[in-house]
Structures are given as structure tokens and as C-alpha cells.
Length: 374
Ligand SMILES: Nc1nc2c(ncn2[C@@H]2O[C@H](COP(=O)(O)OP(=O)(O)OP(=O)(O)O)[C@@H](O)[C@H]2O)c(=O)[nH]1
Ligand SMILES: [Mg+2]
Image 1 (cartoon, protein in one colour):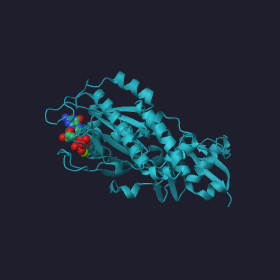
Image 2: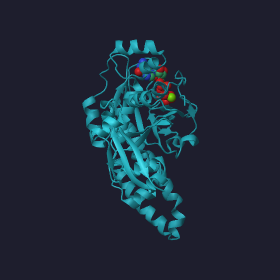
Image 3: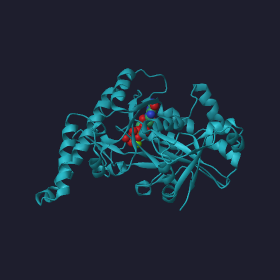
Image 4: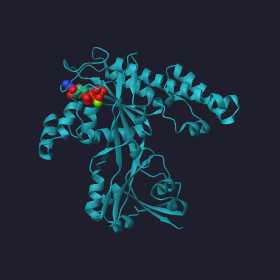
């Protein structure tokens, strides 16, 4: 799959694709970053006053381990982990609040909050002067207000059912009132301790403050001291998020170069990884995800999973039958495979190929063959 555009309905509810939303104030550099990540070419010259427009693009997650496994197995098919980026449209309303394209928020796994830290005389800042920490506080409260709106609407909608004493609606109302109190203390729902019932009930809801956050400070082309990184770090530590600093404009210019120029340019700037790689590594850390591999002459494939997953659950990612009939997982760590000259025979003779049971916690880089019986 080449990088291409998608519609919301193409990705909503799709399993096995990590979905990242780029969100932020108008003119913070969301679309520029989107272009840098997807290598697509959305126009960034205008100010989005008229309509709120979102864009979705998909990428395959580059992985040098897959390249190596392919050179060993020469498979007919290669399958990489897929990721989508949604550039979420936003505009400032007359009442001062921000209006986000709520449709585009559906089903996202995380938010990358783009914060303007670049100075420019020609690009207007909707809140006046450049001040990243103020923008961050502003966005946090916008997200909280957005969730409070959602709760109000929901409470309104279930009013009739509550009057009729519908048990589910009454339960839902109890939860919603607790969420409301939590948000009113300016705390994101991410820090609310959901019980199993609450989690089940609200899984389908698109609360903004329930999504893990990667802060992206969009700095200028030259070293910028507009960001108080210490303060940002402290904020992030309490919220359990991550942060990245990059210059979206420069990164966009770099992806548009051909490969040879790209390498020279990156070297000159002392950047050792393209923006997509840095972004992916940080996102995987934030979401606590790992990758395992299945290999063979037909297909070499990377599977993305939550890090805490068991071998049986990992098998279920491939097919529910494999999980149901699970017997054992034959596991060889990628690094051991390479150390053994890419030979299972050598790895076996050294006892590095392990037979693991269904409770085994799959590790990043495991090469797995599942034994199952259906
Ligand atoms: N000087 C400078 N300009 C930048 C940088 N990043 C983005 N810009 C410019 O800022 C303007 C806004 O960038 P966009 O990527 O369109 O920002 P956006 O957040 O998508 O804006 P809206 O869609 O209008 O909300 C464009 O003119 C970009 O060229 C940067 O690092 N330095
Ligand atoms: Mg834009």
C-alpha cells in the first residue's frame, strides 16, 4: 500500500491499525506535520476559516528487522504494521471556544497535540503571541469542556429513559455524574479509575480526555527557546504522556526530497532518524505496544500488540481458531536469530528456541510459530 488518503469510514473500527489524531490550535502546524509523516501533499498556505476539514493518511511502519527477515526468507508477501494519521480540522468559534471535527475523533488510539513554538511574522496565532505553555493549558481546558458537552448531551438524551426508570440508563447517569465531577476538577478522564462495568459501558464513547497524549512542540527552523521543557516534562509526567520537539516545516521539506538528498540533508542537520520513525517509536512507548513476527517463504509479517499480552491472545490476533486450539508457541527472539546466523538449526542446538504455553508474555521482537489444533 502506498501512502494514500482514506475516509473516516475506511478506518473506523478496523483492528490492527494504530490510529493517531493530530489535534491543536489553528495554524499550529498540524497539516505540515501530517504531510511530513505521510509524505502526502496537503496545501498549508491558507487559514482554515470557512470550513473544518480533516485529512486521513496511512503509512506502513518501517522496521529494519522486517527488512532483514525478508532478506533471509525471500517471502512472496511482506506485511508491515499499519498506522493512520488524522489531521483533525479545528476552527476558533466566535465565542472563543475551539470547534473540532468530532467525526474525525472516532476510534482514535491516541492524540498528538501539536503546539506552536515557532515564531513567524506572517503566520497569525489565534491567541496572540507565541506561548506554548499557555496554549497547552488552553487546549487542556478545551478538551475538558468538549467532554463536558458530550456528557450534557448524553444526559439530555437518556432523560426519558431515566424517567421510565430504565435500569441501564440510571446506571449510565450515575457514571456520567461522576465523570462530570472529575472533569470539573480540571482532571482528564484518563486519570479516572474506571471499573470493568464503566469501561464496558463507555468504550464506544469518544471522550477526548480519555485518549493518551503525545505533545508535539513545533519549533522553528533554528533552535527555539520558546518552550519551557522542564515545565512541559513535569506536566507530561503527571499525565503519563510523552513529548517530542520537531520542526514540522523542515521535516516536511525533508520528506519531499529524493533519497540521496534526504540522507545528505539529515546528516548535515545532525538528525539521525526521519520524523516518522521518531514519531512511531514515541507512540509505541506511549501506547505500550510491541511487535512480534511470523515468518516463512509465503509471508513475513509484523503484528502489533499491547505489550502485556499473552501468547494465546497474540494467537487470537492472527485468527480466533489459533487461539481456541492453542497448544504451544514456538518462540525465538529476533536478536538470537540474528546471532545464530539466521539459522533455526543453530538456535535450536543452543536451546534458544523455546516452547511457551498460553500464559507466556509475548516480548517485542519475538519470532513466533503457533502450534494449534482445531
Ligand atoms: N516558520 C515556520 N512556519 C511554520 C512551521 N510549521 C508550520 N508553519 C507555517 O504555519 C502555517 C500553518 O501551518 P499548517 O500546517 O497549515 O497549520 P494547521 O495547524 O494545519 O492550520 P489550520 O489547518 O489552519 O488549523 C503554514 O503557513 C506553515 O507553513 C515552522 O516550523 N516554522
Ligand atoms: Mg490544517
